[in-house]
Image (tube, rainbow over all chains, first blue to last red; front, side, top):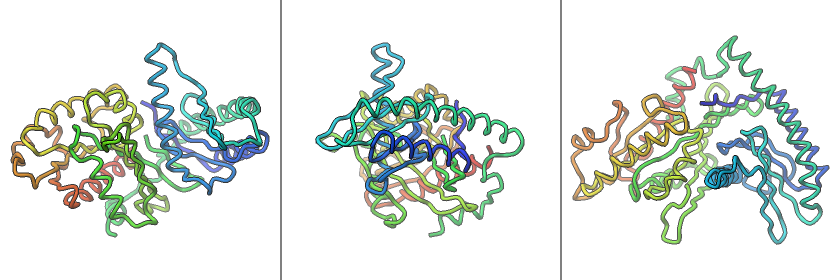
Length: 162
Length: 194
């Protein structure tokens, strides 16, 4: 079983800057990163325009279903999904086996350009991810990584007091 | 699998409502959605068939407040209960932090409850989890129906590990938030333990 994902400020900033660059270089409207469980990690562009929480969970569901399809026919995975709309298109790709990179673009860009830029950005994100995992292990060995280590019963009860 | 984001100071956890077809998983989420503050909740997404049977999942993001400076965000999912959607159920359990089992109290549904509970155990295992170890709450739903089996008998049949158990009438809200609170608490305790 995988450990939960832990992200610190430094990696968050690096990932956000990779996403920002990808958005500019691929002329996309929105770029964002979610994990395979549907948790949103970071985003760039006009993310206020869409409901990113829903988008993240549906993307993860979509990828999970497609993964299931791949396994059924004996493929390891379909690493890229592409949905073409009248105006907007969605390009979804899997990064480092546990993250999903989503790019939303319109006629100002093209599938070819997006694919090209995504490949480069994905490699960079994967490097950050590897470092993140190494760091989580290191920190985890030194101290409890969870901010909840010292949580009290009162803290938890307070959440539900309304 | 929880996701702790130190940059945004938030923690995300995933709760899955499991149970046989038509036991009231979606109704639980709908009630929570209706009764939560607009600032607390996101959109309720239902991927359902034309006859309102869950096809893939329902999804409701919920902010429960702040603990130690961290925003706690709960992502609530339901699975499709019908037996033949097993492949989808398995997918939704991926990365789960806590499970609610919604049992149908009607006598005619006892076999379906037992079968679904076994199926939960199997599917958790396939995702690398053990029902024995994961935060888990049992809900006896539809207590208002005339054919409801006694709580004692249901407990004997469905209790797995002495988990917190609640009686519920989901459309009226009875037991719905109690169930959610119980599983959320267990998940937070689990995070402390890690």
